Amino acid sequence: MPKSDIAVIVDDRVRLFSAVLAATDYPQTSQAVKRYHAHPHARTTLKHLNEMNAAAHPAAQGMQQLIHSGIPLHDIFSVALRTNFETYKFQGKPPVWLREEWLYQLTNFAQEMRLVSLWQNPISARAWEDAYTQMTNIFRPVAVKAFLKPFFGEIAEDLLVMPNLSYPAEVELGLRTPHQLLSLIPPPLAWGESNPWPFDEETNVTQSYRAALAQYCRILLTEYLRDNADRVAEASKKPLPVTPQLREKHPTWVDQFTALFISGVVYIYLEDHFSKLESNAFELMERKVRGMTLLGATISVMRRYINEYGNRYHSLADFLTIFPTQLRVAKTIVGS
Image 1 (tube, rainbow, N blue to C red):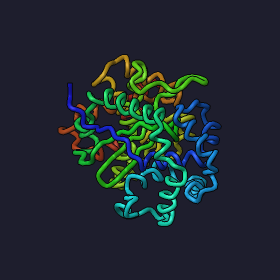
Image 2 (cartoon, rainbow, N blue to C red):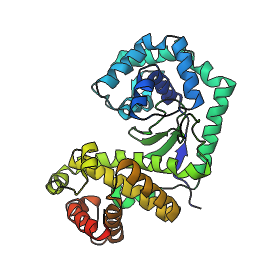
Image 3 (cartoon, one colour):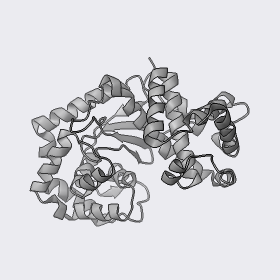
Image 4 (cartoon, helix red, strand yellow):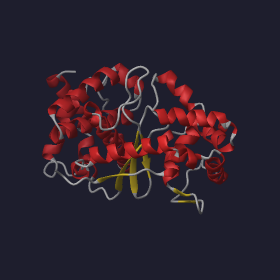
């Protein structure tokens, strides 16, 4: 069994941001995108905050404004990990939209809404302890840095995962600090009005692996493509042979490449480190839910890159410009 290079944490700063998000209109508006039944702790948090009129608090209103301004949740939540709420110092250069007074309002929100008491309630505390234990157990055999080396080189950052029993309850987030990458993962959603599955429910374990790996890749690839903008500009002259459905969801070349790349990486990791059964189940869901009909061709092309890494290719940048052509060829051979 490999030694895990992913650490499980529960960070009160992230829990604070989740609670503030619950005081916005997010729990309601997210249901319009995809109907889901949140974890009991999320629903308890929502009830508690509604009783406290939390939506009127400046911290909640500040987050509401950020969401309505189009600031992605992963950028907002990354502020949590990069802020010392005792000194109100931000690690690194703060984003232009971050107001210093909002940091003070967040601390006041935690105090006025009695969040620590909420988290220490026996039922809530047990739910968090169980989630931490479940996630620790399932990530014990998971190591990804060596697997990702052909794509991103040596990864110096600490890789972290955190269970999220609050909001967002239906999507994972990838958070970035100068020295850490954190995947914030909700428990797997069940059907209808059933509570979400435990993280270690046997048939849903790889959902957490997929979520963690996808978020690490999203962060690293975004930065890698930005740092290699000249290669991206050259590669993007050749359109990717994606379906209209995928093009609608991901209108730019970079968005399309990112979606294909992440799906391909997750499939290959599941196949090589867990089982063909798990990777096939993932491929089926990608095709049915996300319209990822090019996944088979993408896997074929990415396998070729991995096999020739260190010989023909010495970095992903070397491969970018020929990826569209190889994908078209693989699509013809593998099918779509």
